[in-house]
Image 1 (cartoon, chains in turn red, yellow):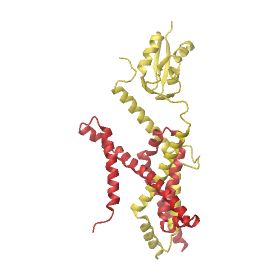
Image 2 (cartoon, one colour):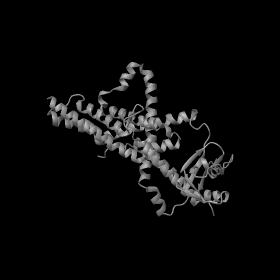
Image 3 (cartoon, chains in turn cyan, green):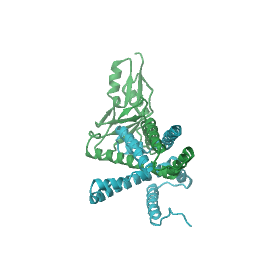
Length: 159
Length: 209
């Protein structure tokens, strides 16, 4: 019996290490963090940002893999009072929503840029001015798309 | 008089805090004649003004021209970059409240963003389902509760990330630069190249005619 358990431990460890390698290679290739650090002139804090990436992914991993066995909300509302957690929980939700939204928004455009979509398009159609308008339209389009997606429940399979 | 050779290695990008930029700020140089060397080091290259641009690109050809008019019988040999980006920064750039807010902001994006990404990835590949089937396959029975598979996966993921990024808790595991440090330098180089080429195209570079 313990041999099977060992086998599973090996499977799990290798899968985890490889998934980390794969997911984070893509993530590094896109080069989001250097851009954030460059824009805010905080390049000397790259170490801290990498630590945040590490702890963020470990947190995300634990929360999504052990989803059913980690009723964090129930624990917290038992620990604090229900009302207090109701407020604090919403603050956590807003933080998570805003910052993960920012991240995904940047990621989407960074991938588009890595594939040179915008420069190629601009060159083909002889686009010289109004790049700002184009980028703004993209942002507005993505925001509207996201709202429609959630409001109209586009994630449901059609019958 | 014997002809002197002044070797000069221009930097790609410099940040200065004072308004007057001397040649020794933007380049390293050496010469057998110390008199020539000190004169060259003190050559005034650019003067920032209060409400002028905060960034200027200077071509090495202009520097050579200035050096030759100042020191006629010196041969200048450039071993470094052909264009230098000079940026004027405020003295307290690395301190202050705003800087702290920016750091917290980027940290939050990094933390919540990656937490979201890895969860979405797990959702995409249906990891709970995969683990359920692997458990069934290996053990020949259905799992009740979470199993060693999930635990070891999480440990594996953590180890993988830490090896990939090469540090934990502010301590490096090996002496190599981390992937984001490497990417940061690549990004800086690309920004520099873009700055130089844009300035060249718009003819804002300080250059000979």
